[in-house]
Length: 323
Ligand SMILES: [Cu+2]
Figure 1 (cartoon, helix red, strand yellow):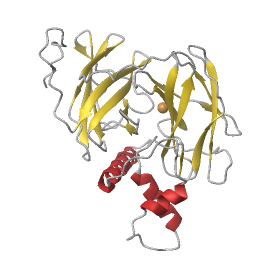
Figure 2 (cartoon, protein in one colour):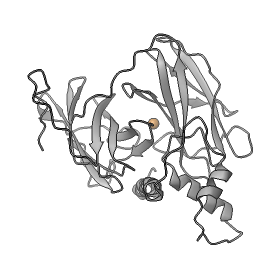
Figure 3 (tube, protein in one colour):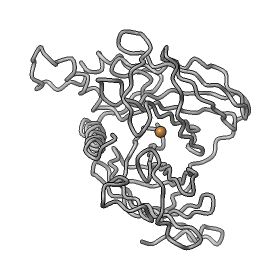
């Protein structure tokens, strides 16, 4: 994904993933019982698949991958995410360790660099209120470690987004739990504007299930457009979308990249995203300016008429973001 071409194919791949899930009308299975990759492939492989002996395994594997959105399984295509750290206390920095084991059972040590990193590690609270995008370090034996601090008690979901050498891109997900009193927060209300650290980010565009949807995110500061965004991991912005309800993971990349002669350094960052179903999504945009990476978050509905604000005096009367 370091080249525009690979970016394109990645986005297309995601489109196929979600299109497949939608077309099959499948209900995503519970995260606690990930099917074995082989069985899954057998269940979902189309009967029309050419029964060639060479490359059949790869084809079945690919089919399995295309049917399920990323991040919902702890094990997929023979690759398994294994947390080695089991206790996380609220607010305490933890050296979080994990491995990814491959089809042979050994820890994977060969990864393709994607967006400057071999592995991207995303951690969110299951209520989708908090988001962290981290980059663990790998020891020669394949054990990854990263400083992780989870502020509050409760359930979390961690995603490892990577491409094993010679394999295809995968996002594996695992639940993490922080012991203590937990008060789940409601999903933040839908909003097309958000502020972070003095920056205002506005979102334009609609998410249409099953269709590539153009989203434009515009960054301003003190009312002025920001036109000198800095490349972060090879792009002016990284957008992660998570589906409310099951946290299906969609990593979207911008249209164009720094230095391609056509992509401006803000204030607008354009993305193409395809979501698998109607409903709410949480969007997290990482962008860099002034040497610091910040995350802007949104709740965006897909495929339904935007919620009509209730005409109550205490309602959010200032929330009418026309576009
Ligand atoms: Cu990353």
